Image 1 (cartoon, rainbow, N blue to C red):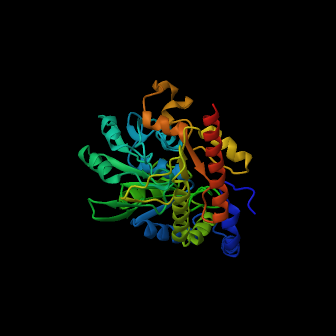
Image 2 (cartoon, rainbow, N blue to C red):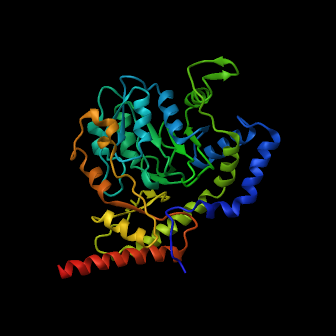
Image 3 (cartoon, rainbow, N blue to C red):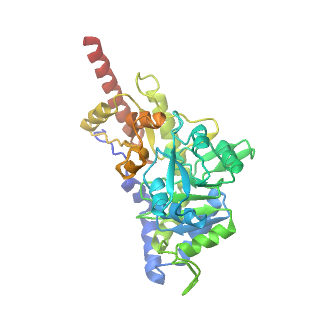
Length: 384
């Protein structure tokens, strides 16, 4: 009998891999190369092949991946980088930390990803790069974004931190492309809760540009081209060997785990389709999402969240305050109403439990809770 459902269950993922993951730790302890050990290069090679990019460079976090991507493209003081306002703070924070200015766009109302129409309006003579986010595991509409970038001679950095394994059908290329293979560079996060999660902080940058790859390799390692030869000002942003060992093992399972997430998403959609006031995710025909999060939408978001928590069902809010309304950017002078699609989504979305090991019984328990909430609100409305 199910009596509680977590938003995420990392322990369930760890249990069947315990022997392999423990062995990876022991292997690193045995050879002693805790930094830049052989597992780092092995993982980078496998990661590039999985994405369909020529190069992958491991770094210390997804935030670092975004940072080195921008630095490799020369983003600095006076520059502008266009990003969606509906995303995690790191996407904007790395721009600000380089002395550049994040310029926000609204999102599409159904996918919550960068709206190409809003993007076109955001570009100025100071724009250096465009950074679309593949939010919640679904890719942004990359063909029009890349066409706008081409016309304005701008570089595109994919924030693929939530979309490892997601695919986009490019009419321009006539084929499916994986997240991280379409822009000038892309950033991935391996934060533990991601589809491919490390046992701590970790990230990677992918690119098809050899010069960018070489620059990023130096930037993450104090700007060194070789030991004690510093070609530029870098910093310590390396992927450590133990995390690379974990990621090698887990990358082999990512395809299956993503398929399980898609199966769970399809089942949620079928079970929730007839509920008034509940909107399930939209997956465009050109996208194969990997459902890092399964986000529903309701006008009574807080009431539903409270009701479910009382039933021991944990949900999440991603993200209740858009970037343009964060205190950190109060000096930009934004107001409510500046980005209406984003603001509406931020008030209404709720993330349901989603992870590869989620059982049908757990899903039924979640859906039953939502149904009881909808029925109770309908009964209250009828009485009042």
